[in-house]
Length: 111
Length: 115
Image (tube, rainbow over all chains, first blue to last red; front, side):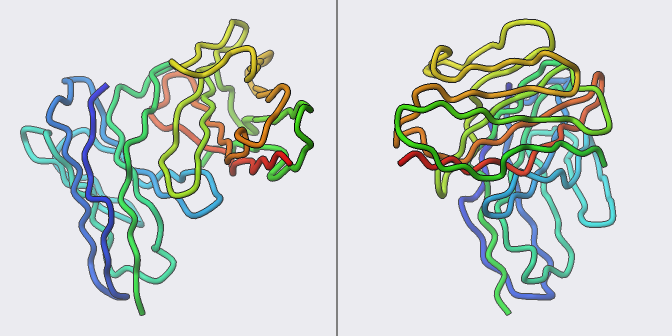
């Protein structure tokens, strides 16, 4: 399973765009990249998943360069409710493949 | 999205007693479920992988006799903390994945406090 490296914490203000980058230098050919959000005392919540280039959904965008050794989660116009820990996971998400969490990025959004 | 229900959401027990936590996939069949524990301000730590109808696979350092995992059906896995002690107090989270689905779904977690 590819190891991931993220910034420990980030600060932002409401209305700003936040980009959180994750490094995964030893990502394998079949690996997907998945981001989860976790609020205190809750289980993680799926945000977005991608394999290459760009993926966008109603809450975020995921940018993956051609070499796939990193990925960037982009949160447009954050609000106070986006204050949470964001985890980047890499692995082949089929059947019994394990989900190993790294340290995550603690995002604090200020008014 | 799919729903994973975890019960109870919190529990307080006396030292030496056992506690069972349930994890159910409500609208899909989960051949594999995962159990995590999380201490304050820390990341999730994988404890074990539970496959329906077979013995769980425990991560290194996790005592299988202390943390009993049963995955008797495609929608239910249980974690029993046996002879709980204060150091077992933690936030326990389960996760379930549908066959051939690339997305894993998480329960809301169980806060265990051993007094």
